[in-house]
Figure 1 (tube, rainbow, N blue to C red):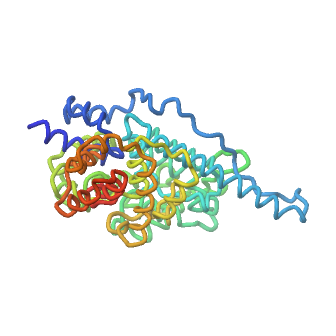
Figure 2 (figure 1 turned 45 degrees about the vertical axis):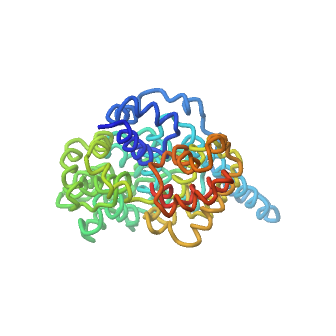
Length: 439
């Protein structure tokens, strides 16, 4: 395999396993080789000087004004508490974007983003930056390991519990929200469970309560239904841990999770997709996410034309990748987050428990105009010396090298050539080209 092909495959790998490769990263990875680069990206135990010293921001639990606040001061106190929460969410979001841009091994942050969309939880309902940060750290520390361990930690974590009303799930009046989403979205998918499974799952999850005052999650035995339940073909007096275990152990779970990971990192594929069916048995043996990712990245289908053109960058991927490529930081936090709002994907604020859509959803006129505005803004700040020093006819190729794009279509190449005398205008066009917008 020649170096150009290896370089192209690694550039694709970096777009999917991260947020794109800078030219220096791509040079080093091409010298090391494709499989060695996969190994390095999957080495989550290795130090990452880019982010290891990047401590999370200080956040405090959200505290709504209580009865001790005089009535005539309550509105102002409520507004102050909400303003503090908004600022903390900005701080946490900026910290996370900084990590995406600065990480020398970006896969951990890309995987954290994937799990954030999978176990979608919104701060708009949780109303607590500390809980959202804790969940984000759970994705980061457990996301590459055993899926059951991760699922138990997230389902029993305060952020998702608040979001899915776990404190309202009690023996006398079960609340089915967590039980339904555990099956429908988190573990087995639609069509692989019954309404009785939802009801009995809710019974098994009763009594798991989060105390906002102490920050503790406990199983209140008085509120837990300890009776016999039949759930996904199993019968017993199941506890919350049992319910999650049975869900992730269901024969439908490994194909479903495999399809979700393949669809996010390679191209869309349902559980009956031939590649997903090929990858599923390996994942089913030990539910090891890292091993599944390795199998995905090393599968021949991962680097085919169908996979390379199979995904559109989600806005967070697009923004982080662009800042990364151009050596910029999300230092103007409010401006960057405002752009993400306009682009339709604000961190910690998924539209619903189903997470963010994929692909063509991001190609409508409104989002395209927002991309153009963002691209123009970052291009104006960019150091374009590498483009300017190239001769005008060579500048489109220099832009491709800067953005780790294999090359341009005839249409894109012609548009870039027309703007070649203005490197920043040409860079703006490159950033909104189909070749760059594809993940």
